[in-house]
Length: 347
Image (cartoon, rainbow, N blue to C red; front, side, top):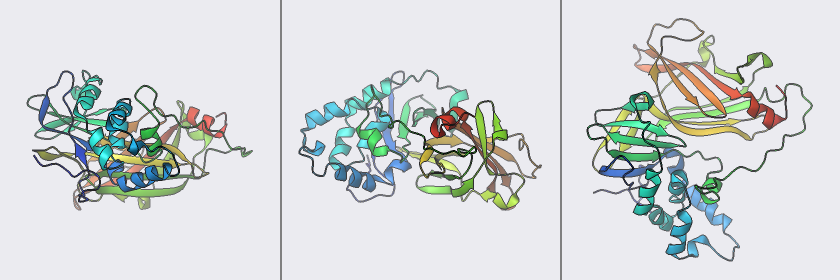
């Protein structure tokens, strides 16, 4: 069976991959493979450089420890952190692909809730589901076997999360101290958003939006709305480039799940610090029409994402004449409790 090269190999654009084991309730399928998400793989060299710098001047290097001790250390990592550790260098790549370790990791996940209602999408061979945090599971349609597992890793504190945390005690960011600011509107303006939608190294959206602002009037149901692209301003509408689909590959088969992709989002606050970050699969689903805007001639779709810190709502229109999707609305809904904690406000 063909295998992707480990770190330090021929630099295949596809990235690195290792094998994943079967899980509780599912047999290991044909050519089961664990694939690192694009967000991690495109910066493996940067991770290696950062990790190397962190050991400069140390009397003991992790890379100098015996393999038995390193395997014991890696046994405390969860699935996402273990995959990230495998991107450090060639040796860690092989240690992180320890087969018994992956057997036990996948068995820990409760897959009983993987139903049609929680399915992200499917093609003729597989169905894909999202397991939080950051794992995508592919199951063969015909036999309900595990086909692959993919992890999506955001760059923010990636090295710290993969080396300083464990499955028992995840890495937590240092406590945030709000900056002293007497402005009555702090936390409402000067946000900067960068958002990507991609799959297999191909980007259908890569956009940066600056000077985003909101007001107290947009607070509703514990969320504050931050409008990025408006229905009313057609000059803000953006096309998605190329076809939208989530590419997957095992040792034997490959395919693409239409209307799905990976969304990477980074929201910086007014002082330039990351306020909200995530990397997650999303799915484009049919919509009855724009929620609060003009009527468009083409078919309408929506993309939604939510976690403990906020929500993303994106609406698109299919333009038949040009054969492309246009984003006609993009809004972030930030949890007010997070804003108050971050800026020391009392909204």
